[in-house]
Amino acid sequence: MEARKVHNMDFQEDSSSGTTGNDLGQRYRHAGDLTGEPPTRPFAEISITVPWGHISGKWYGPQNVQPILGLHGWQDNAGTFDLLMPLLSPDVAFLSIDLPGHGLSSRLPDGCYYNSVDNLYVIRLIMKQYKWEKVSLVGHSMSSIICFVFAAVFPDKVDMIIGIDALKPHQRPYPSVIRTMETRLDEFLREDERNRSKNEPPSYTYDEIIERVYLGTFHSVNKEHCKHMMARNIQKSEKYPDKYFFCRDRRLKFYNYAIGSQELCVEMAHRIKCPYMFIKATQSSYFEDKKYYDEVLAVLLKKRNFEYVEANGSHHVHMNSPEAIIEPVNSFIQRFGPAAAAAERQKAKEAKESKL
Image (cartoon, rainbow, N blue to C red; front, side, top):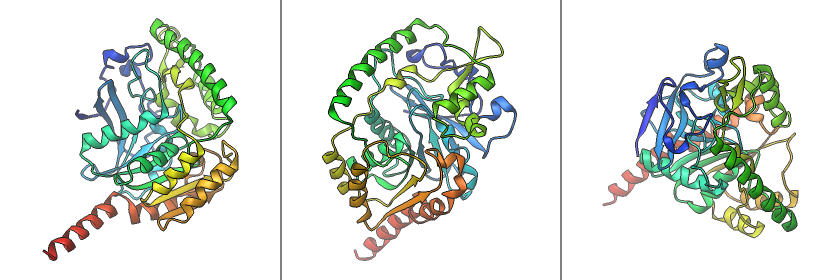
């Protein structure tokens, strides 16, 4: 595997994902590529080679130190952290990636099904590429859950986690789970066939596509901020010069999010041992019966390095109100982020050597 820095969108997508909407020469890296405004914070566009294509990302801050790895929510993209980035300490490096099928990253090959737990593999691939022994993670929504699971499965490979507004794998009544599996598989099959047809999806004007993003988040992202989420997920229409279409993989709408039972979630919570901050947006739901959330939270609250923060805001609180969470986030990163963790490991190494 190799990583390459990309400063413009003049590279082409790999043939394994050659569906309409994935020609990266016609894509946008951030809202300013559409509006002409500068990025919220300077970044380098990054491309990491993976077996099915590449993972794209935005690297903020110094590139000679290990970054925090930022992971977005379902059907979002690396733009989810655009409004939080300017508030981070300038010496903090942050790599915000597009997960497979999202943003500028390669889709999975035709016929392959998306499973949320597969993103554990994506994290491990990135760690292998950059030779990180441990990783520091910030995740929102679906990826906050992925961070929880990753830290439980690989407790010795995580320096710290910051999760935003989704704590754990959600529990559903079993009859509902079975019906959802049936529906999602049928719909996934339909979208997989549409991908292979190479037909251009429906297109919209700029204002219409902003409205669709706004409605798609159930008003969770303020309308004036939707451009940050939209840019990496759209492409200019070839049929209608003044319109755009969504080019994230449509199969993502029906991915498999089921990870395990409540008993498994509780066991995972017990296994996590890294410093862990969880931020709950007070105007957001729990996405499941709250008793399941409370049971896991109770386990985590007993841990010495677990910190719980409530912030006034919607599910996308980190976009609408980043100032509401930045103080505890910066403090946590200063104490437990990659730089602090590396210093602690070096200190422990020197202490061990001094005893020899």
